Image 1 (tube, one colour):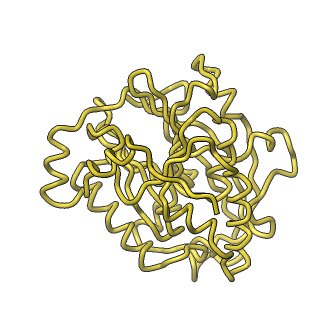
Image 2 (image 1 turned 135 degrees about the horizontal axis):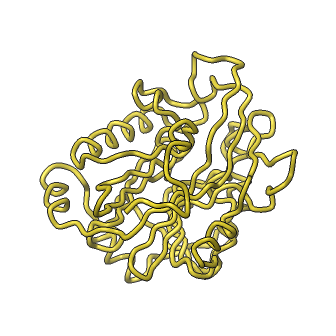
Length: 293
């Protein structure tokens, strides 16, 4: 297995990272700076044939539509992508694309490249790609950004490069993850929470459970305030309200603990959470070229 070490910059960031608990988090909030803009990027939508996979014990055999959302973060002259969605090659394919063909099919109405172009940007203008986790609908376009630094939890990278899981669905997801991630030229592996720019404007939050190295992101905006981008710490607002853990999550206890942690952060920072796959919520949010500031 190819191994990667943290750059000196990322080591400094990790050492300076905040735990976001108690007094430490309060002190961070008092001095936090802001990003300039947060853009929602349409990264696809999907139709699953059995909602009970995401709501165990309920909705057996009922179909459900999910959104797939990415975000573009502008901070001064730097740009960060949060996740990269469904592969651009899916565009215009009536059959769609899938991570697990027997369960879910994804479709793409517009590409990341075309949406960046609306802002006068190209993939080469992106400085960082922050990965919530390695499921294919989140890393489908990592290869569009060969010049960007890809940032993910070390636990996630170790997981997809370990012996394959015994569960056939998880095994399929891991194999696809390795293929889509490829071998980024600039890969930074982090552990736990990271105050990315050491100013409170962009904070990686370790939220394992869906996968071993899942993470969420909290950004600070001057007008909007704090926004937590969920990753897949939760799929639906109703799941979040009732501690419902999808069947494909690797660790139920960790999943619930991560949801509890996000609830505490929402309360502490008066934050809003944007839930990646909750289509009802996503359809109500601003879409690029509109933005939050």
